[in-house]
Amino acid sequence: MTHSAAAAAGPRRYTIGPGIVMMRQGERADRAWLIESGELEVLLTAPDGGTRRLGGVGKGAVVGEMALIDDGERSATVRSLT
Image 1: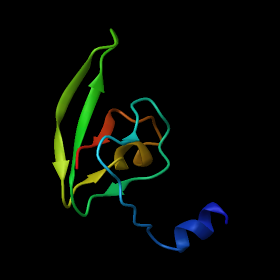
Image 2: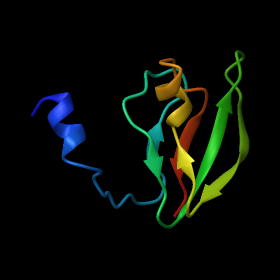
Image 3: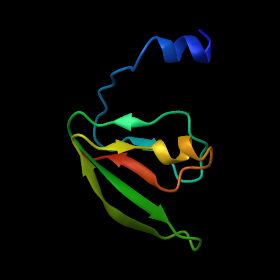
């Protein structure tokens, strides 16, 4: 299936368990996520390798869209909590 055919097929639903990294800081973007239920945490890795929790997001949030919009890299890591 080509990229345009996949986009025309519509959104896909995924069930993701706790502890799954959905996107990693520095990676190229290939999708955004609309959260229907559960909670995610947003993490930032500093140049020294330390990780800081920026916050959490839940139902109704959209994550990952900015890297798609600016055709850049992910600015943070997002991991599922529930």
